[in-house]
Image 1 (tube, rainbow, N blue to C red):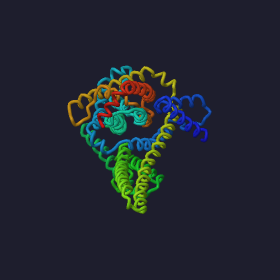
Image 2: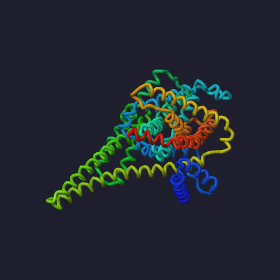
Image 3: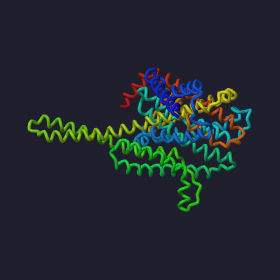
Length: 459
């Protein structure tokens, strides 16, 4: 265990060094270094021994990653760009699945895939990785609206992809009948229920947050809130059964965790803004007292004390956020190391054609969806306009991540195409991580002056 800990810490250190010195996004460094460590030091004990343990590990780490990413989104941004995010996170996912169904026979002519199997396969590779997007964007000066669209879509579309995967794909794969009424009922039930549970747990977290001034305790409240909302939603049927409802209702832990964190973060952000205003007001008052020759040292000391207390409180909130982000970086490192251990390179090579076809197909579908989004936004004033550069960024911000692996492990092992699906999903994750990230760096790097000018104009 100590050797594994040293390996994880060493990989994270080197990845951060590559990011600082060479501007290589940390997810790329983590994946590359994880494979180097795995194949270079095979005697080191593995973190996960099989697919089931890996899935359990991902589910355990997923909430902290969601909490960290949710802290980057403000409620005001959700309100301002609600329509845009609704399209990117919901409509685009649904349209992508429908487009995939229309071309599936051409893409996989050698396989007799049912519609349910196609939905399952494409839902897995439509879920994006917000960690990679945030890591890349943090190195550049970009317009705030563009960052909100890309990062918000990366975060929220995970919930949509998982809902489509579980309640449509797996349901149909198990013999369930998909009807318009079923889709309407399950969508409203899962989405509304998850949001309500998330916000309820979030408000409970706020009560606990206001009871402490300890930074570590504040960070624990954030973690308990996110994980609590996730667990309660994933096992909501247990609560209903305890209340005598005898229901099998299942909600989205991802969506609940996101809204619980956003609820707490909204109040934290408001507190920080109010503290900044108080600091400015107290500084002005102090300047006036200093200029007044009759000012007493006691009055000046009182003002200085207020300023110090306000700064301490603001810094505590900001440091709590940084602490959560650190935990998320460690969790992400563990995830990539475990993924390197689980990947069978011979399996990927066996299905190299299918992997390449799927990667190109999903890239094309995403480009079309982002192009349609750009066309719609330029026709209405209620959505942020998207130019050609923004279209490129949004298209290649669709890097895949750990949630795809979680969904993969939910497919019955007896499914006849399980081996092919496993190879395709893992292969697409790897290709998108390296190729999409490289293209993003080229697009942003070659137009950094234009992006900076847009950012200045936005302010």
